[in-house]
Each structure stands twice: as C-alpha cells, then as structure tokens.
Amino acid sequence: MPSWSLFPWCRGFHIPSTVVLTLIYIVYVLAGGAIFWKLEGDVAYKSIAEMESKKVEVLSKFTCIDRDSMNGLAQVIIQSYKNGISLTDNLTIQGFWRYSSSAVFAATVATTIGYGNMAPSTPDGQIFCVFFALFGIPLNMVVLNRIGKYMLSMEQKVSASVGRKINCQRTVRVVIGLLSFLAGLSFFFCVPTVLFHVYEDWTYHQAFYYSFITLSTIGFGDLVAGINPDVTYPSWYRDFMGFWIFFGLAWLAQVINFCINVLEDLSGYLKQKQAAFLESKALEETVQEQLPSDHEDNKWDTKDPKMCTQKASNTTQ
Image (tube, rainbow, N blue to C red; front, side, top):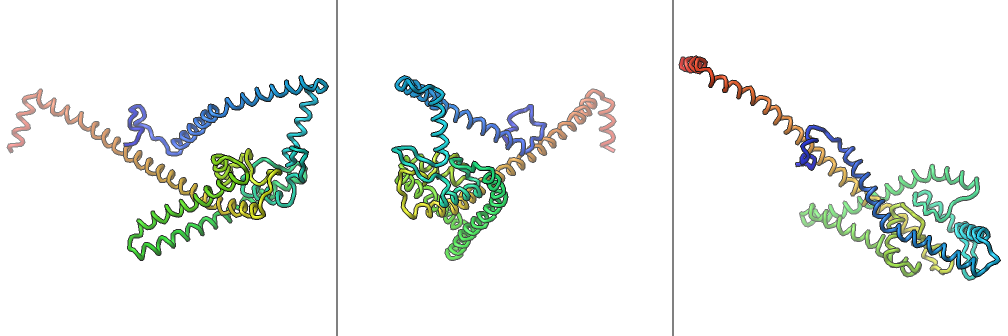
C-alpha cells in the first residue's frame, strides 16, 4: 500500500507524481544546504578570523603601510592568481592563456565543466565564448551520447554472446553489467585518484572528490589539476587528462542515465500503486453506499409483520 494511504485526510486526493518528485527534490536540496552549512560554516568563520588576525599583525609590524594599501595589494595578488600567475618565490609563468591551457579551457566550456579558475576578461573574448558555447555544448552532447551508446552496445554484445554460449542470458547480463561498472569505476575514478595524489600532492579524498566534480561537470574550480606552476608534469599528463575527461564524461553520463531510469521506474510504480489504491477506495465507497439501503429494507420488513406475511405468501405462491 502506498505511503500516502497512511494519512486518512489525503485518501480522497490524487497527488500527481510530478508534485511528489518536486517536493522530494526541494526537501533534498534544502537538507543538503543545511548539511553543507553545518559542515562548512564554522570553517568560513575561522578563516575570516584568521585573515583579520594576519591583517592586524602585518599592519602592526609594518607601520608605514595603511589598510587601504594592503587591501589594494591583496586585490592585485588575487587578480594575478586568477590570470594564472604564481608569486611564490619570485616565480612567474606565462599565465593561463597559453595554447595548451586555452585548449583545456575550450574543452571545459564545451563540456560545461567550467571550473571558474580562468575566464575571458576582454570583451571580444567574452562574446566569442558565448558563441563558442552556443554551438560547442550541443556538439559535445551529441558526441558523448554516441560514445556512451557505443560503450553500452559493446557491453550488450559481449553479454549476449556469453549468454548464448552458457544458456543463461539474464545472469550473464547482470554479471557483465556489474563488471563493466567496476571497470569504469576503477579506470575513471581509482586510477585518476592515485595519479592526482602523486602529481598534485592532494589527499586521496581530495583527488576522488575532484574526479567526481569534474566528470559530473559540476566543476567548482577549488581544485584543478595540471595548473600548479611549481610542479613539473610529465609529457603524457595532459594527454591523459584529455582522454580521461572525454571518455569519463560519456561513462558517467550512462551511469547517471541509469539512475534516472531507476527513478522514472520508481515513479511509474508509485503512480500505478496510487491508481490501484484510488480505484479500490472508490469501489469500497460504492459498496458502502449500497449497504444502507439494503439495511433499511431489512429494518422495515422486521418492523411491519403484514409486509413479512405478504412477502412469505408471495414466496410460497
């Protein structure tokens, strides 16, 4: 029996599945916001307190610097960081806008990852970015969809071939699907996690977090691989990054589509259960409406002996 049948006040109402899913989505988002607020809020307050303490320490140590000058210098440092310039140990690089990093930026636009660590600042660059994304995003979706379908068809062909040989197609389909998922999880998450831990000096949970944030196209930009100017990356590192992102997006898209299908099937199941419940409820109400009239007839017959005698004689005849 559906969960809404537990509440008598809503038994007579038909609740559309879209409304139910929308309410679940809103509750899910609000609950997630509350959890993030609880987990990250205290850290933000501590960072603010630490920054203010450092400001006071610098101003007291260098009395010739006022607060406005220090804030201006901080803005220059922030803008330099956004442009990909490292100021540590007097080391500067060409910034983000080299060809290799520009190509990576174009890929993040087309895939909608959008880390946010770099962005066009000139009017011409911003206008070109709009038109580039306008055609690049649909093209990216079509290509990834084709690659995802190709990967899925390969899996289905292998499972069908093995299933025919051992005459157990359903079990083989489940096993092959599970092995395919574990293989994709290993290649697109476990292997990159180890590489990012080694070359980016991230913790394992940071590397795994970055892998999912990238392949799901969330792309916060708090962690970005391959841009640390203090690290000498191997020549194959950027090639691996491009290969990993391209095929990882297609694989994760198939996993997300599978989860969507599960939610759609669950929604359809709940809709069927609700329709069956409402139908049984309507039938029950119809039967209850007919019962009082029969009861009144029996009650009238019992109170009137002449009617009972007349019915008995009619039955005898």
